Length: 442
Image (tube, rainbow, N blue to C red; front, side, top):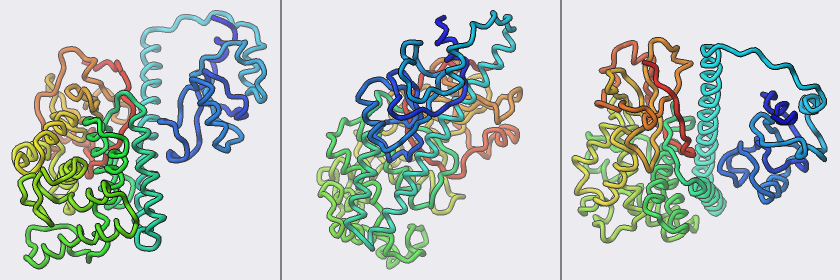
C-alpha cells in the first residue's frame, strides 16, 4: 500500500479544508441545510470538476472531509492550501511496523461497530432532511394567507428540491422514520408528497407534471386553514351539515391556489384529491376519466396516510392493514392501475409493518426498495443483541429467510414489543438504495 494511502486510511474523523483545495476523490461533508445545495446527499465523494465548482459556489470557506473515505494518493495531496495536520503527519512519518493479527472475534466486533455507525448516520441524515422539509411545509402554510406569492415561490422550490434529489438516484428506498418531527399537518402533507412523488417516478411522469404533483400534494389540504378545529378531520358522527362544512376545505384550497398563482396542474390536485374513480367523491363527483393522473395518485396516497395516521391515534391501522383495506375496498374508488402500482411499490409489508419471519422471530420493516419491494430491510428482535446495537437486516441478501405474516403490535410478545418499539405515527422519507450484506445471527 502506498504510504499516503496507508496514512489516509488511518485517519478516522472528518477534518476541514479550504474550499479551493478540494480535489476529485475527496469525500466531503456539506454543513448546509438539505435545501441549500443541489446534491442528492450532503456527504459524498467528489467525482468531477463540475461538482468542485458547484461546492465552491455555495459560499463556504471551508468544508469537512473524511480522509479515510477518500481516494487520494501522495500526488493528489500536492498543492493543498490547508492540509490537515494529522494527514501531513502521516505523509512524513515512517511506515509503521506490521500490526499483529487480530482474532476473528475482534474483527467481527469492529465490523459490527462500523456498520452500526453507518446505519445511525444514514438514519440521522434522512431524519434531518425530513425535519427540514417539514419545517418548510409549516412556513409555507403560514405564508399562504399573508403573502401568497411568496408561498408559491417557496412551495415550488421545495417541490423542485424533492424531485431533483429523488430523480438523481437510479433506485431509492422508502424509509421509515422515528415519530415524525413537525406538526401533524406538515407531517401528513410531507408523507403524502413523498409517496406521491415516488408513484410519479414509477409512472415516469414528465418533469413538469412531477413538479405540479409535488406542489399539489404539499398543499392538498391547505383549505383546512379556513375550517374550525372541530371539523378539520372528518368523523363518523358528523351531521350532514358538519360533513358539508368539512368538504368546503376543497373550495377554500382552490381559492388559495388562485391567489398564489399556482399552475393548473397543481391546482387540479388540490381540487380533485377527494374525488373517487367511481364518481362517489366530492365536491364534483368526478370519475377517473375526468381526473388528472396527479390527482388520482394523491387521492390514493392521502387515503393510505389517513388510515395509518388518523386524527384519533387509537384507530390507526398498521401499514400492512391499510394496504390490505385499500386492496379490498378501493378497487372501485381508486384508479386500478395506480392502486396496483402503489401496492407493488410499497410491498406487501410497507415500512412500519410488524411481522413474523419464517424462522419465527419478530421484526419491523424499516425500508423497502421501491423497485424491488419483496425483500425489505427489517429490524429483528434478537435477544443476544441490545436493541440500541441491532443492525437492520436486508432480507434480499439472506438466503432462505422471508416474512411469514403480518402481526399487529399488540399481538407481539412483550419483549419483542419493547425491543422493536413500533412507531405511534408512521412517517416516511426516501434515501438512495444501498446494497447491504448484513448477516443475520442464528
